[in-house]
Length: 283
Ligand SMILES: NC(=O)CC[C@H](N)C(=O)O
Image 1 (cartoon, rainbow, N blue to C red):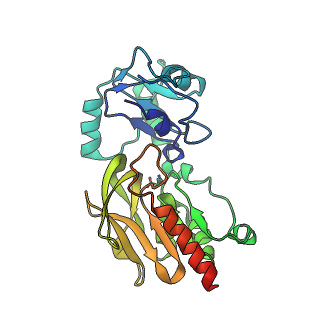
Image 2: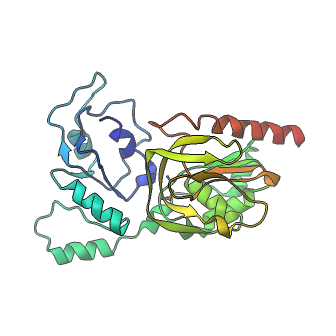
Image 3: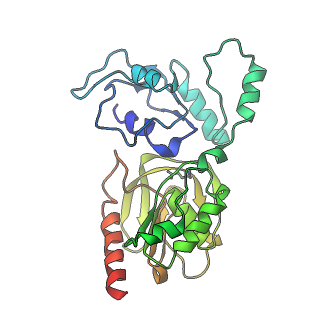
């Protein structure tokens, strides 16, 4: 079972624990090529069984050593099936992982109460003016961790850019765009996480298998007239994509850039490139 390394280095997991439902993790070790970003962003890794041996031609070190070097807590030999059932029932929960045996349960509970996902929504800092000054053909608002409704200043930045250049939003970027267009977001029960979520593209009628990783979603009922829902998640009918053709805006809740991931959405970047070309021709 490979591909846990990409999850470890996905910035959208900042401040969160990831629990693997596959029981056997670590068998291919980690390598130099599969990093999704410069560091491990998640808060901790929870697995059933850490592979006792690694076997892969690219393996550079074991998962355990990799996490220890980066000071990321991992725990194994826990009943991940029981925790999965609990998460399914209650939705995402706040938790604490600690190696500090002297802490009482009360103290650990106290620690968990002081945590807030909003803190992780703050890395966004490029001002709209600076962005427009470099005269971009288009602007892409990327994925990111945290609650999209907790960053009104980021929504303001997006608003200042809309209509001036073509815009593409992915995941957190899509949620910021949804708000900038007048809509609202809400927290899902346990969100969508995985590499096999079916999505219908309402423009083409095609069903695409997509990689998804989000806890929040745009409420389609909150969107003003003219903003079109272009993609729908077929598991629960939630909004998976938006467009506002009058202002050259498109956005997706899932990950066409995902690695690993299905390739059904490979066309989404060429589509944005076309949008930028057309906007340039019509300027
Ligand atoms: N991958 C992302 O960009 C995640 C978006 C947002 N933080 C969410 O959880 O919904």
